Image (cartoon, rainbow, N blue to C red):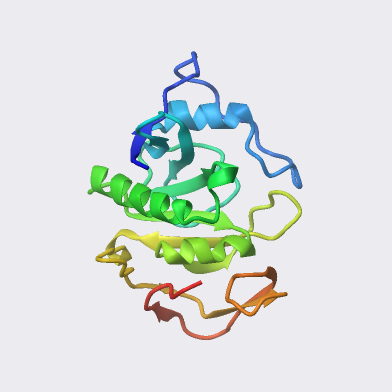
Length: 217
């Protein structure tokens, strides 16, 4: 199967739609159509789709917006600052029948390489928030833990992860080095790391450590 990473066609007629209204606490986690259209119209270079070159089927998409802050707060995730130096990734979505095949990992790596290459002087870092069960995916792409996120979105806790431009190096599957907090993830009902139901993520106190790669999950 052959893939191409392209911008999704704009479907929003209004070229300058207003920002989506703030989400109330514990709202359903899925982004609203208005929010997706806002990101696509205002932050088009960071809204990319993965297509089958033979059938033009949309296989996956990733979108993000820019902010000036180095960490993610609720307000910074609901707007787009064209002059921001931090890319906040909001969505990494793969068609259900293609999941658990490594597509999200490959696409996300390609996405990060593409946006960093296209914005060599302005884009300095990438941030996202995730639940415990997706930690392995983002680790494989070079992200490290930063903190327990203060963002309230749905019922569960979120964890902020990130990577910086200077720490992102990918040569024959080798991830770059970054810095993050030591942590332990406890999985239930499995003998493989990140293979079961996440029961807990425990941050360790003390100095930050140097990240030496994501390891196998």
